[in-house]
Image (cartoon, rainbow, N blue to C red; front, side, top):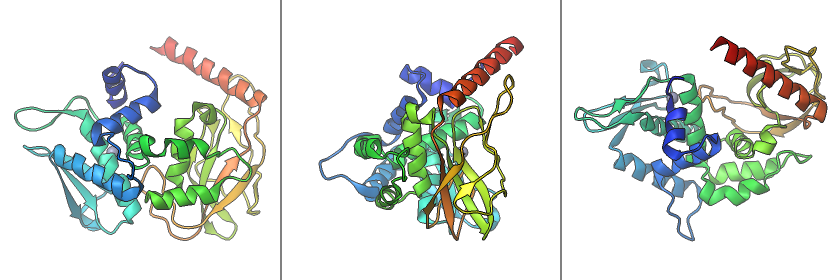
Length: 301
Ligand SMILES: [Zn+2]
């Protein structure tokens, strides 16, 4: 198996649990010292600033025309430079900065500056997003609040999600992702989808949180009724015939939302959609799909 940031950190921390790995990585980067009055995004920003200083990272803003990315990490003889595109919203800037900070974990020190331990990968990008969420929405500070945020409640606690996102200067979508990621029980059942409304009757999926095995179409223009999506949500299953999930409930989240891929810059009106919890039949199908995939993988290796 090839080494990547996740396998490297799993070995360092002695655990295969991705959530624990991401939390430990965030602690390694920005520390875990708390004082009784620490709270809010200014406290998080102070932690990040200290981490950048300790690692010898300078931050440089570049024009949109010079860059095809929102942020990128470069090595220097004494540390790193993070180049970030200017004129992005503060919430996006903070996320990009934390994501790039997480990439420093892939390097080791050498006489001529930091050297990569292994090549970059899609896994590393996903892990850096997850570490960035742990940095910006810290477990030591917000674990209790996140525990109380019941995404599977009806209706969804949208006001609480928005309040937390404002206090911590992250997009509401990052809170939704963070809650789903820290609860394995939820991530087995839960599908959350971020839609972008491009026309009065056109909704396009821009991001989703869903269990492994659920097929969420990337572009779905299928619904003209803003309250329910009638698209047949498929569970990807090579054994049984494709099945459909229940209809989708739509919860409105006004304001500017962001996906974990941070390559989107939205304006206008957006929606978070939550599917009803999967029932036992669907879960069984997902389990069979996973088992079949595992068998195929072990045969091909
Ligand atoms: Zn990256």
